[in-house]
Length: 397
Image 1 (spheres, rainbow, N blue to C red):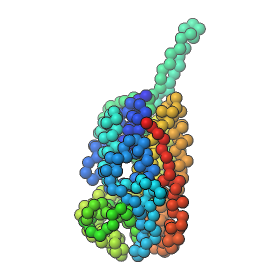
Image 2 (image 1 turned 90 degrees about the vertical axis):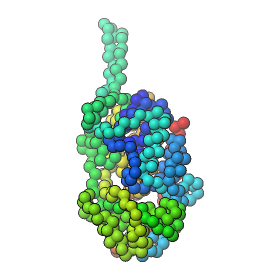
Image 3 (image 1 turned 60 degrees about the horizontal axis):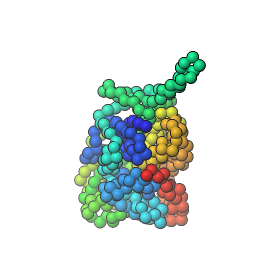
Image 4 (image 1 turned 180 degrees about the vertical axis):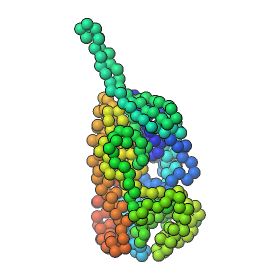
């Protein structure tokens, strides 16, 4: 079997590696150049995503490229501790959440995919998809001779290239081109009421191994120690109006919004480098994930948020490869994949919307939430998240 993958981010690169593990010939097309320098900000992998990496044989290099974060502490706007819980895992889980720059994660997955035999071509943007059904033709006077013509899928690219395969995996993100080609009635992304400004600061005194989440007055603020004297941070700013992408005053505006929170204000003031801002978008549930030959995965199918975007992309990749290995045809494999993944994704989407609501809350609602969290987190947090972190991926090797 031969597969084409559109999109070389986390989902696409993980899918290339996973499919190579089950013997599929893979060509991956990515519209942009290889990740280098500041491509996005940092990303976290929870224990379920790390187990997916272990199934791909890629856990150790990702751990070496990132920072292990065993704990998460949640703080009120006034600096009061609301909860101290295991970060992205159950308390008994020995796998600790890993935070690393997105570019490092993508580069590590791509290198592993290429080493496993995948081909990666950059600078190619998909513009069209056409599927050809298989045919069985009987010939001869009494139809004694049968000829079977296998079906396939053909992809057209902006530069004029065409390529065909047995299976097409669209991992081209929340603004997916293939999703719209697959289903012209598919939902479109909408502004989620949040945008993120991220940076690197030089600041001592931040405890290593802790993911700090402050529910500040104007949006959540995240910071963690990334090395001696280095802090990574992100302000997730709640603003109903989508900001201009051309605004160059990101740091000044962010400092003003967080001026009343002591720790976030100090971290922002010590900034030495900013990452490109990110505008968060939400996507209504996508009804059609696949046809007989084409499937959307990762953010193209289900941008989940809740700190699980990368982990879910890796889970998708492993589940897809396992279905391809187990089923007799691409159509059966994609149907099995859909049945396996959709219930879990649907449950997580509800959690993600709850998280966005916490980050968008106004001052009064935030005070009520803080009081509730001080009771809920110590008693129920691990029990409530066990279903998410206990996921065991399929074995591919």
